Amino acid sequence: MPQVIEQIRSTATLIVPEIVLLAAVCALFLVGPFLVNEAGEAPAGLRKRWGFLSLFALVVALVAWCDGDHSLVQNGLFRIDGLVWYARGLSLIAGILLVLVLWNQIDDVHSAEAYACLLSIVMGTNLVAAANDLISLFLALELVSIPTYVLLYLGKRDRIGGEATLKYFLLSIFSSALVLYGMSWLYGVTGTTNFTMIRDALVNRAPHAGEGLLEISFALILAGLCFRLAAVPFHFYAPDVFQGTTASNAALLSLIPKVVGFVALIHLIPLSGATDGWERWMPDHESKLLLAALAVATMFLGNLMALRQSHIYRLMAYSSIAHAGYMLIGLVIGDTAPVGGREAILFYLATYGLMTIGVFALLSARAGDGQPLKTDADLRGLSRVQPMIAVLLAVCLFSLTGLPPTAGFLGKLNLFLTAWSDGTQLGHVLAILMALNAAIGAYYYLRLVALMFLEPSAAEPQPVRLAWAPWLAGTVCAVASIALFVAPQWLWDSIP
Image 1 (cartoon, rainbow, N blue to C red):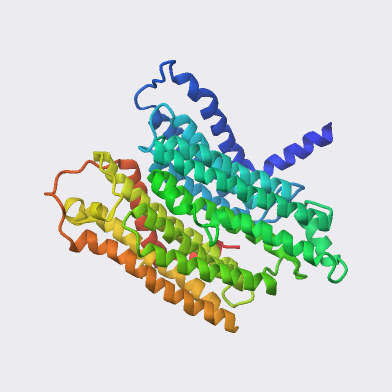
Image 2: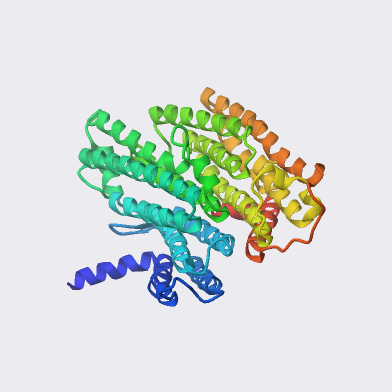
């Protein structure tokens, strides 16, 4: 018994930020229902109190994260290293921004559950990064998925919202089944679920032993995780789900599943059979070709379909698909190039988070007057009605385009240099195709900017009441996007 207690204690010391979030989640789930009466009524402003509690929990977890270090510490279930440190910071900061976007997107009655689900998703994202075992990794993935179903339903409970939730639910459990089935094949080859022991078993196995089983395992796990990335051909749920949900949920789906998917792939790609050590990260030849095909198909489909969209949420869904294709290029190249693929992906995730959360935050900030921005028609002449929102939204769209002086330019440049500096024909082809897709994407992003500044508004300008919380989140994202272009080195240096 003392050994069990000591093991629990040692495990708890590795996940202090997640324990802080867990305490807040328990408080929200346990106390929230008691503040709603039998008639389904809640005190006015209750959502703001839960919002402040969620922000407090995230700030405390951020402080615990800052006090952590990059040194390698591991036990059976968790492994804390530089990747975990970076992913934690990214998810916690994104969580603070998402709380602000959610501020006016949920009613008082369901606010406790909504914020609890959001904190659970952030906690699950951190645990995916910290996982050192197939079991802890799968449980962390589900800790992200299950609260997402609930949050999607709570955000919009009409017919369209219910349809979006059902589509995401059915396809998500299918992807979870694929991941779990793939993990079972990997366990069958190695006889263990611990990452370090799996690595040792793969390195020391007889030549060509279990190669077919490993290929099946990798294909199944990749297919399941590609659902989270919204990569082709597992992308088809995204446009309908984005259109049918709220701005806060769309912002969450744009970023958090990508962080989860790419961090999990960075964990698992070394397990695909390569014989190099943990310090040298790269996919093997077969994985390169498969990932390259996924990257090209995802980029082109996302950008070409976005050209046809008039609903901004659907456009951003296809944009999200295209950006997943860009980041897949980093997985293809690995760390063989002078500019490492892993570093380029992690840098891009941070810049992409600022871009996409900023767009949805600013779109929902207009909801303060009951008129959220959702279609092209809503953007016409926005610079005359609400110039500050138009300017900030233009900055985020410029960043998505990849134009200087925004962080999006540096993110795309890093991925381009990663592919080009690989020195192989495959790398050069991917770099050229990425540049071509960036040019295609520029058309539909800049078209939205033109609508705001060059088109006349449909009605006379009227005073607009803004929702302060999403406006603050959008302002932070836009300003940070420019600041990161001016001083990006600190973020690059923090990437493991």
